[in-house]
Structures are given as structure tokens and as C-alpha cells.
Image (cartoon, helix red, strand yellow):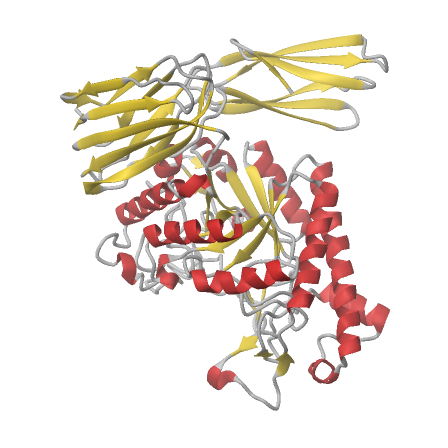
Length: 624
């Protein structure tokens, strides 16, 4: 029998009402304990408590749940001394809410110093992951499975287990000859067609979308920002300049440089607008859009660099130290004005299609404040337009723990008055890849004696990270996107323990290089979900028990009905049409049974003129 010992002292405090309820209970509790708080104002609440949790078995979690909504919860980090745990985004209706602790583990939990506070905004927490590689993995024969070994669709499975945002990275035209001269990305994946399909899969599974424009045919990061091959051709055709010719780049005049920058800004706008329009047309407008990937060094080298640098003339990436060759290297002078031109062009294009989409500027080395202040001071000085600061945070590369990442978020969000999203993070659940060699996240010294590279260590790191980011001041950390949950090992039957999936393909022999993240994914070497998925499942924000999303095409109104409960729901979709005088001229009603924790699409003929969609979910009428 699973048992915990829990001691709770709860205080619920409203912002403007002199109201408090004290609850004190203790004893030998089976499976958790809860208490109902009543006489509440409807709205959104945050719950905090100091929790001692000594068990590494399963997961235990603090939660709050109100009528008509699923629970909002946070997994308790392992802590013998006690740690403050934060649950954000508890939606309260009908004036009451149940708060408590649940567990599927077996250990002693003590809870004290409980605060339940009304806030003035929804404060949900994004817990997502990069899903860009899914089609590629599946094309190689890779299969995703639940923890029992049953085959699953990764979008649907992760969504049902708490992942609420899919990151999708668009590369312009990947393929042979369009990389860095040594490696390339496989053609047919990460391109426009593939990313549109991935966005549709994400939206159909109920996920939000964070869409990244790489503005490159290849991997882009702080030292590599290669201009897309089609853009190179367009500039040569329209302006007569070859921006892949090192001799030209080293000899071009300031006038030529500015002319090329203006053309690139125009291309960035048109390309971004076109892709955003296609996303909108298929009903997958991204909630968040990042312009470039890890652009601390700039974008579209050598026309938007943030510091004076040199670029290798063969691979078109920045070179440092002994790799420099003054006679051969391409000179990359600092040009913040050029970078801001590109950023503002992308921003304007996003907003022209979707005013509600938030634009992110994403840098690497999250938790290193000085690298961000240097960058964003310059951007603000020059009038760059953006909504959210994005940061990659890897303990192995920053040598900072999750608490330091939280303090970084506090400092940067306060200085620039911007929300922050952790765009990438990762941690080893095995010390090596399946072939016995190290993956890319080796030597994580900051957690070496705390969280070993095991399934349990990975789960405990994720629990700590989620909780720390939820506790950022004023809830200014929007959430975290994991890298890479789905780029799993795909066994090469001709080469035991080697993987068919890899980070890139070699130009020399067209063979796939190694998979450097297969020991950090949310699925093991056999494709089975690892225990960390439960951290997503039990760290969530409130959702309506039955949630609906509506889109339309030329013939149908399509309503996606998501049943977030553990029982079958019978729902009715009602589409009411109106004439030009706002008089009802048609009513269509379709009923549907939706199984527990699944979603169904209901199609109704599109009325002429205006229309409204209503869904009766068994207890309330929802209008969209």
C-alpha cells in the first residue's frame, strides 16, 4: 500500500477581501490529502507551499482543482529540507477549489506554509518540446511507445501527458550541397511542407505552437548563420552580387553592403509573411514565433553580426583562436543596424498576419546575464521590435543549476520588462548513447553529485527545473521547451547499437552522422516513454474538462472537442447562422460521444454569412 505522511497548514487569501481559512490536518494518509477552500472570488489563483519530499519513487505533486476544470499541479522536487513549490494557473469557478497533495510514489511528505492567492491573469505554464524531428524519425522506421511498450503517436501521447506546446523549426531548403560544406540536413524534412504538416499534427493534438524561422538551409546558432541558398541566388539575380564569394565579401563597399542588407530585409519580410500566411490558412497560427535560432552572434552572416569576427570561407561559420587565417577568412564587421533591420522585418511580417502571435528573440547561454544584457541593450538602443526574450539553458554547458536559471530570469525580465521563455533545455538519462560513446550533454558538473545520468536523475532534474521556473517573480517565465524529446535512437540492423537517425548527413559519403541526443530524449533506446513524462503529466495548468477549438474551410465548420476527463462525455455542437441583419437563419446541431482523454473532430456545413459555434459539454454551454 502506498502511503505518505503529510502535514498541511493552509491559508487562502484574497487580494481585496478580508478572508482567510486555516486548515490543519496530519496523520497516516493513503495516496495524498486534500481540503476544499470555499467563498472564493472566481478567477485565477496561484498556490505555493513548502514541501519536504524524500521519495524518489514515482512522483508526488501539489495541486488545485475547481469545478469544470482539470487540476493545475506541480511535481514536488526531492528535498529532505523542504522547498517552496509553486502551482500556477488554477482557474476557480463556483467559488470553491480543492487543494492538496497527490502521489503515485511511496514516501514521507510534509507540507507547510500554504498560500493560495488570487492573481490578475491566467498565468498558465508552457511545458513543451521540439517536435521537428518526428517525421524524420518515423520515416526511418522509428516508433514511439508508452511506458508499457504500446505504440503511440508522439504528438497525441505527449499532449495527453501534459506537453502543451510544440516547437517547430523551419529550415528554408535543406538538402545536399546546402549545408556547411561538410554536413547537410536531409532533404524533405524541416522544410516548408514538412513544418506545415508538423504544425497541423501539433494543433490536432491540442498543442500550442512555437514556430522558429532558422533563416538558413542548415543548423543555425551563435556562430553559424548561413544565408539560405535561394536567397543567395535571388541577390545575385537581382543585384548582381555573390554573397557566397569570399573575395567579393572582403572587398564590397559600404554602399553595396547596405544595398544587400536592404534586400535581405525585404526577403526576410516576404518569406516570413508567406510562411505565416500558410500557417494561418491551415488553422495553425503559432502562439509564439522566434526570428532566427540562438542569434547572440547575429543573423545572416556577414551582414548582421553583433561583434567583429572572422568567418571560414569554406564552411561559412565563425572561427576562433588557432582556426583563424587572416589571409583567407571572411571579415564579419560588427553591424547591429543590419541585425535590427532583419529583426524588424521579421517582426512586422509576423504581426501583419497575426497580431496576437508573440515574437521571440532567442539567445544561447541562458543563465549568463552579462551575455543577454550586452545584446538586448544594443537592440533596445536601436529600436528592435520583439515581445519575449528566449534563452537556451543547459546545465552541462552553462554550469549553472535551475535556481541560477530562475535568478537569471528574474534579473533579465525585470531589466527589460519582458517575459522570458526557456527555448531549449536537456539532461542525460544515460551516461552515453546506445553505442557507448558520449552524447552532446556530457560533463554536467553542477549536478554531478545530485542528479546522476539515470532515469531517476533525469526525472528529478525536470521536477526541479519546472518548479524553479514557475516561481520566477510575477510569473514572467512563460515556460520551457525541451530539446529534443523525440529524436530517438533508430536501430541500424546492420550495425548493432548504431542509430539510423543522426544530427546531419555527411557530404563525403551521404551517410548519417551520430545521434548526439538519443540519451536525452523523453523516450529510451527502444522508443519507450521514460518516467520523466510523468513530470509533464503532473505539472500542468487548469484546462476546461471539455475544451473546444474551431476552424473553417470553404465547406465546413470544424470543431475539435478535447475531453480532458477520465470518463466519456456526450457533447453537442450547435452552429447558428445569421443574415446581414443579424437575424438567425439556420441552426445545425450534431451530437458526439468523446472518449476519456481523447479528442474528436465534428464537421458541420458552413453557413452562408456570419455564424457562431456553441458546444454543450454536459454541464455548461461554451461559445466560440
